[in-house]
Image (cartoon, rainbow, N blue to C red; front, side, top):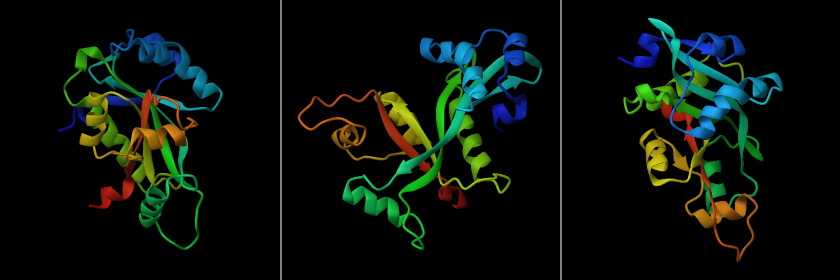
Length: 199
């Protein structure tokens, strides 16, 4: 039994929904501020859409919120070994410079419902949503910019995600860092291959 699909309803996060609900907090100031003030502006400018799960028996409570937008994995400037590996995952009819994906840009669980597996359920929902035949566009990967914290990385790995780069230095250079500079990454690029759903 999944809590968010059995005990919640799924909605776009709009100004009307925010006004009808209690303040949403996942104990992360940046996420809290985004969902309260920026999410609907992102939607207005077509930069991302935010959705939420509300308790069915108390719709004023938002259990979980997530933001998604179109994205891709740039293949052409990956290190050769990683580029060859990513190419091996896909068809070979025509070489592509980018592989299609969807970015889960924000994901937050209400502190009231923390540590109950709801974040993992939300990721499973996203996977099923974009793997579904009702999805109207090609989408091979779920992509996240995971906060570069061992607990966060472990959470995504537990949910089937892989780091795109084997080392932080490779990713640092890929994202615009220069050789010889200190390697500082606040996030790690991770992906989930939706073909895993076939297994």
